[in-house]
Image (cartoon, rainbow, N blue to C red; front, side):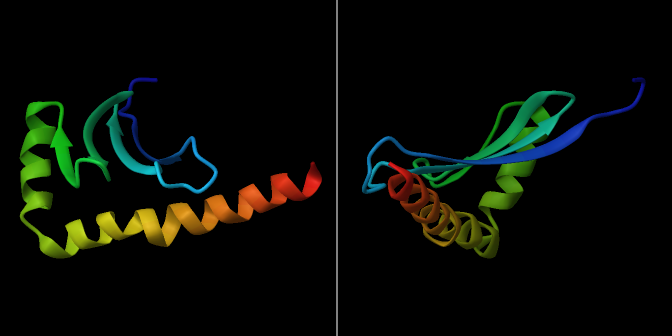
Amino acid sequence: ANGYYYSRWTKCIHGSRDFSDMVYIDNYIFNKDVFIQFNSTVGEFVGYTAHGVYNADLRNKDPNILQQERANLERYCKPNAEIRQSAIADKT
């Protein structure tokens, strides 16, 4: 209760069946507040606190980190969404 809380949540959000509107979001959270976020629509990290702005700037300057994050839409989101979509469609 008196400590610090850190978590990282990734989300894949879409509304269409063909996943053409899919967005990958990677949130870094400290004490329940998002301090840095990668959004595939933006294509880079955005900081929401002074510490987050500093870290977003560092990550945005590293082409390897940016390449990995940008690839997660195709590498992580779409394959998993296809599996889940087919599992749902097969049940209906």
